[in-house]
Length: 197
Ligand code: GDP
Image 1 (cartoon, helix red, strand yellow):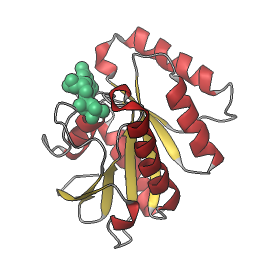
Image 2: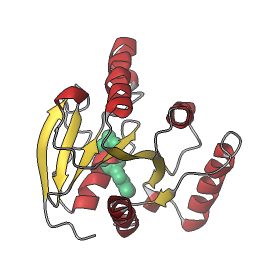
Image 3: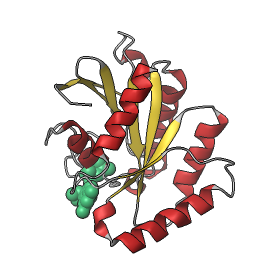
């Protein structure tokens, strides 16, 4: 897919106020600092489209970007951010869960996972919850460039093994690096294939 246009539309903390034109949506989610903003900027080829974690104040919101005037790329708040405190985390959880459960036009959720880390309980539990609720999702490993190819493959294999303890089948998996633009075509083609089906 060629990105001809990418435009910020609106930020919300309430799914009911998100765009109502029925265009298909693809949302990106992950723990804070996983590399979500970098990935969104890399996918859209727009350096400052999604604000990186160094910019405060954007973290509680659902951000809609209109791509090629056809579909929305949705930047969801990062979860499990320790500095927010329990109440803040609960609020974010509510925003995220309401959006995911209520948004009919959400066609796929991309769950971002740092390729350097061992499987984290918070991510595994979140995916479990998605499965229980029948939400289609894929796993996107980020920051692949931060380690050599052998280590990277070991980490990803370990992750898959952990998932197969509870899942019969693995969801689609993408390996990405925003630094190296790795995984861009694969992700965009995947979105295109869902858009067409
Ligand atoms: P967010 O909080 O999930 O939006 O994460 P950011 O996109 O702000 O990234 C967090 C940090 O990781 C920043 O310092 C980025 O420069 C760095 N980062 C993100 N993606 C990559 C990547 O693919 N490779 C490398 N080497 N660093 C990355």
